[in-house]
Image 1 (tube, one colour):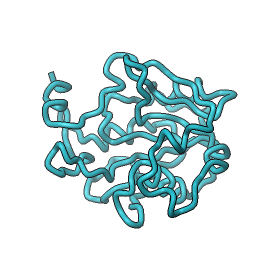
Image 2 (tube, helix red, strand yellow):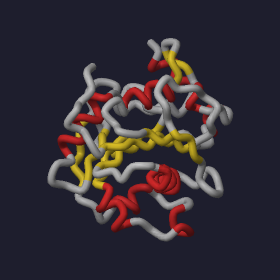
Image 3 (cartoon, rainbow, N blue to C red):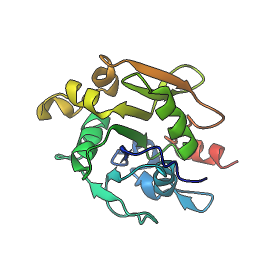
Length: 192
């Protein structure tokens, strides 16, 4: 897939600092599917991004340069992770993509569809076949800043609460895009 040169001002945040409780606490970024790490798939999804920040431990190598950061205190949930990632960006983005590291079927094409759907709105998120919003989306950086809670309010905050005031498009997943790997059984099923 060729680089989309019209995507200037797009930056990505990969959320990789979860507890993976149903996977015995493994670092999901390093979990492999078809010989590649989940982190490699996530970074590839941000092919068009000017910059990528990974919120989680810096134990997994990437082919593309990324910045690793952790929330303070760690494991504060997706809102704290997203906002920590945004704060770590060196560039001032127009659009911020966010992706959970355990969604290896999200691709650069997925992110392009999300960016397109976000035009004229506050953002767009991928939804699964049941209409549930997944942790794969694109947000207008200025609108995100406008709804940002204070530092203490970020930890443990539900993502849907942060996003509630925003006008978000819902983008139906294609194929297995919306699959997130929460257990070893999920990984086995995805690998078939």
